Image (tube, rainbow, N blue to C red; front, side):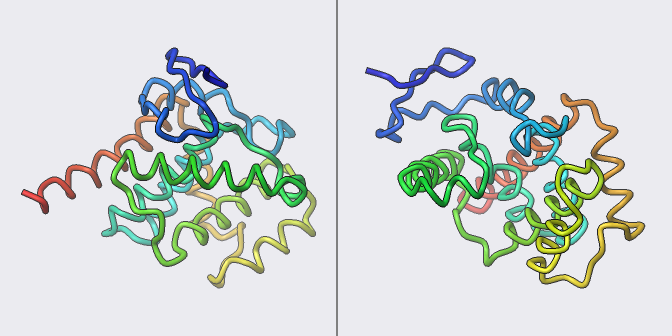
Length: 195
């Protein structure tokens, strides 16, 4: 018995990660329709992932693994959804399920789970930029998140403003293509190394 059916018709069971069938069509459909910040603003998951890829390319231009890692770091939300951070603290079982599905996605795509904290830094910087420019949260929360980012940065710097503006101006299809390209680029490089 399955618990969920993806947009492409793949049936999965939350307690059994072996039921994962990765399909780029599901990624495109689901990430275009999942809103960030519990729907408080019009900022889609695919826009967040594209912003993360652009930031990774800016900070780590020669590291295809980091770009691929940030591209997929929230793909598990396609299968298990998302929950606002504060609520996750009351739902430890959800955290475990989320982690198992994140692992399954990474394993399926051949992308390691860990990369020395680079993904967390990029994700936090994207969070700061998104919340600053969309107004999703208070300035206090922005400062708190900015303090977690270990770079001497400000969301109003010219470079960050341009990266955000460029991402925000992309069509959702272009965001998807950017994200997919980051993953495929890493997979292609990995195949060449393993030949």
